[in-house]
Length: 277
Image (cartoon, rainbow, N blue to C red; front, top):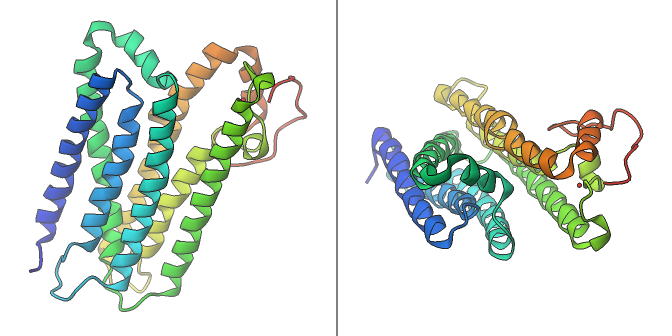
């Protein structure tokens, strides 16, 4: 039975809120705030798949576009969630949450709960972008859909390469205390964040119908714009760079002076430090 769009919207926000309550409880039990990032990734993926396949305004089964979008968001969720979970399970608490634990002191858990509900709302906002793409009523798959799938594949491959390059750098004892400038990290200080953002642009490509037959689809551009703002100016780059400056000092300042913060770009001048992240 078709579901009214407003019901789907309410369900998305309620599901994300509930999921992050569970994430908050688990990080409290495990005393590691880094687990909340894994919960967020898995939750956005699960809710995104459900929202993509939901029968909104139609009585037939899921369209090829709905299945494609569900596969994209589900695959993204598994890759990122498993990567974060592995990192949280084998190492110390993420530097961002460790810093917040120190800053918030005895109020950490209370403030963490509120913070995670904000994250839940952000995740729900992104799922709406996914739903807009999935429910584009254009018949059959278009060239734009296939181009978006290729763009998404590029983003996943790029993020995976950046993660692997950083992991390989950290495994070498000789690099302890240095700054990684290997591979993609020589072009961007946060190539993993860049490719994360790039993947979200794929949903906008799917949602937008330049013929004007799906006007609401243009709202999907708010998704990649929002994730860029979060990563570049709120919960990504600023918190991580503050932690890197505390731990790497002048070496990271030199890295900042030469390498683009977000979008990949050749270094401004030859490397002068002996480190690479």
